[in-house]
Structure formats: C-alpha cells, structure tokens
Amino acid sequence: MGCQTEITEKVIEKQADYVLAVKDNQKRLHEAIIDYFEEAIAANKPGLCQLQTVEETDAGHGRIEIRRCYLSTCLDTLPDAEKWKGLKAIGRVDSERVINGQTTLERRHYICSLADVKPFAHAARAHCTRGGIKGIENSLHWVLDVTFREDDSRIRKGYAPETLILSANSPSIY
Image (cartoon, rainbow, N blue to C red; front, side):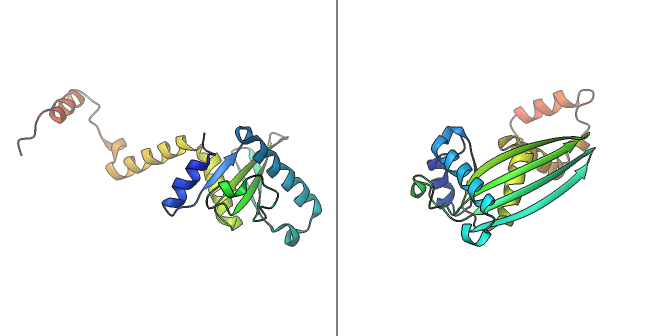
C-alpha cells in the first residue's frame, strides 16, 4: 500500500522526504533494486556504483543486531524511475541478528528522496522498528501520555470515569 506513485507526489508537494519499502507489489522495481545491489556490492567499487554504506551494531536483551545500510543515487537501471516524484536514491538494509547462537538475515529494499545514507538509515530503522502506522500510533500515545499525563490520572477509579463522561457530554456553563 505504501509504495505508490501518488504517495510520493503528495509527500514532495508538502516539501517533505520519503523512504518507502519496495516489495513484490512493485515486482519489476523490486527485482531491479535487488539486482542492482547484488552487482554493486559484489563489484566492491563504491565510487563507480555511487554506493554509500553505514553499519550499526546493537546489543541487548540477549541478542546482537548488525544493520548494514546501503544507498545508491544511481537510478539508471530502474524501470520507470521518472514516475516516482522526487526519487533520488534506492536503498537496502541488511539486518543480521544473533539470538541464542542462531543467526538470521532480513533484507529490505527502499526508494527514497534522500541522497545521504545516514538519514536514510535512521528513517529505515524507524520504519522497521516502529512498524509504520503502528509506530505512529505508538508515538502519538507516548506524546499524549507525556503531555496530558494520562497514565498519572486516577479517573479510572470509583465513580470518576462515569462523572467525567457525563460532564464531557453536557453543555458547558462557562
């Protein structure tokens, strides 16, 4: 749902940037990005491939995670690159996790309007750890809790919830 040309148009119109995950719903684009990074990384010539990389390592809760982020501003091999408004780069994130001695590798591919690997890596990490829309909802809940101190409220005890609902539904006398 997220990787659509209409979305990129709206984001760019609002003078914002996008990092959109590319999956099999954009089959030709997805395959082109996969092929590009396989060849570019194997060539080991970052300058020639316009390839930027950054690596991050996290450890905790009994796991080690290594994230390798790749970003390329070379769009020559992409089919219909011009239809993606504001498109500046393609990206790949490899997440290697070691949990209890077992290693797993997850690989994700992106298109984006960013041309620098560090902001791309940050956005891609936020996307996968916060889970897209769910992450926005969770962040919103945190803001509401911190701002309005919802978790400190004791309105959930006794008759207080009923009273609050009744007063919220009645017209204000002030």
